[in-house]
Amino acid sequence: MFQNLSLYVPADAQDYFARYLQTKRKEKKLSRRALAQMSGVPESTIKYFEYTGKISLSQFLELWFCLDDIERLIQLTQRASQPKPKPRTIEEVLKR
Image 1 (tube, rainbow, N blue to C red):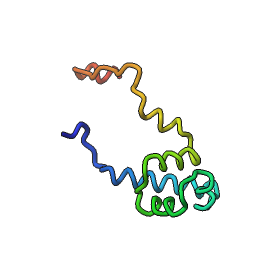
Image 2: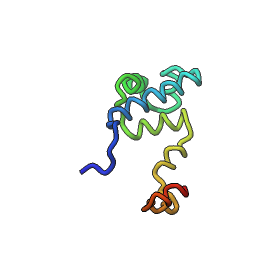
Image 3: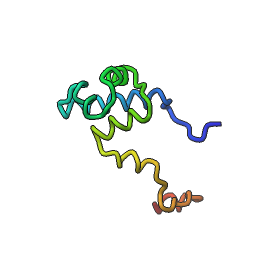
Image 4: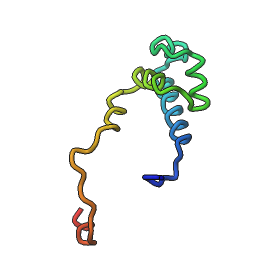
């Protein structure tokens, strides 16, 4: 059922993304209105996102594109070229 155990749940990620993009908006000295004009995402949606973390994926990506490097998100979807095999002995762990 669960592939990876984590202390975080999806709602935590939503909150972190909302706070991160709000901080980036403020660092760039952009009002919600200005960001709305740049991104095409309604100002009310930006406000709702900053308070709740809830937004559509396409609108999130539009905001990210305006505030940060979209390639950072795309890289998260790329697999490592060749994953290292997991160590089987203590000696293999110590060699890393």
